[in-house]
Amino acid sequence: MQTSSSTETDETIGSTGGAAAVVGREVEAAEESELSRRDRRAAKKAAKMAAESRTDRKHAMKLWLYVAPLLILVFLFSYIPLFGWIYAFYDYQPPIPLSESKFVGLQWFEMMVQNPAQLRTIGQVLLNTFAMSGLNILTSFLPVIFAIALNEIRAKWFKNIIQTLTTLPNFISWVLVYSIAFAMFSSTGMVNDLLMNLHIISEPIKFLDSPDQVWLKMLLWNLWKGLGWGSIMYLAGIAGIDPELYEAAQVDGANRFQQIIHVTIPQLMPTYFVLLMLSISNFLNNGMDQYYVFQNAFNQKWIQVLDLYVYNVGMGQNSLSLGTAISMLKSLVSVGLLLLVNWLSKQAYARRRHRLIRIQQSRIVYWVKE
Image (tube, rainbow, N blue to C red; front, side, top):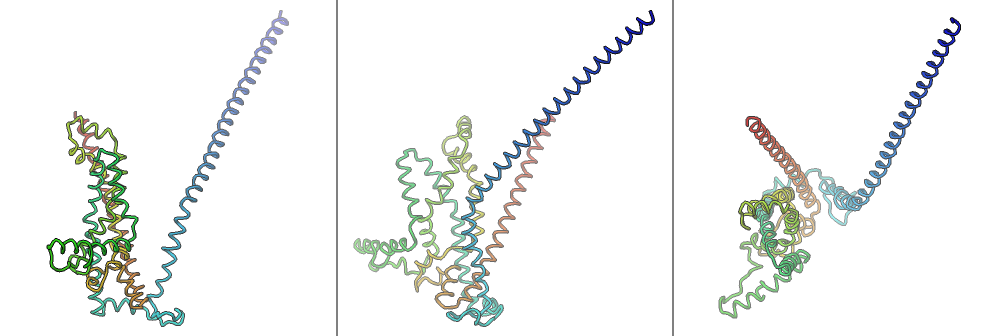
């Protein structure tokens, strides 16, 4: 009996041990299977990340290829010419090489502030520059109004005609613009001929030769040439406004004018302020071509802006070193204006964000109290 009982016990232990071994192998197999699944998932994730990394690198490379020509142009025409600033520290008289020219240090910079005649001339030039740049900034809202008015035209064919006629002058050179102005407003131009034939005037009016209202005349020519082009950005902004905003305004009973005041203009303000900041940073960069073609002996005192003055000093008076010194100071002031505008924009953004956070917090407090 004991033998059979021990035998049964051994069999039971053996079967139990076999079952445990089977279970152990199954557990090990399950663990190995789980590990293999994890490994496969990890491998797939790693492969996916590697593929995404390669895609990102290819995309970044494409972006760099797109930007590379612009960077090359900026480097060639904006940074390499900075080496020409060295002329401001020499008494350079072409065709004498720079290596044989006399080093004068800060002589030209001192002359700008110590020579009374030079100081008066630069003061008048700065006055002209500030006046014309200021007028351009004060009238920077006109493209917004023109874009809104153009957008309200329902006849598409008429809208296209107006947009084409107002945008086309931007592609006309200032030399051709002056040719048109001379044909119309010179002493023997069409306007004077018409007024004299109608016996309205007895002598030709000097529209182009008179020094009166030179700033206003330049502003009007600038508006005529750039109004349509300047409105393109705002037309694109109007096209991107969410139509649901207009639908909500219509539901509230707003007419078309009220929709412009409360929907269109507020949506265009971010674009307007960005362009305004950029124009302020270019406050001293009026350009030269417009004022160069319209200048003459009668209006030169009031039309000569900073860029034109640098050209007249450098090329007209053969004083390249003084012209370089003036241009160098203008560039440094322009960089300072750019940094100032950038700082002001960041401050405005921070204040606006802080105000929005305070409004949201007040709303949350109100909801909690309710």
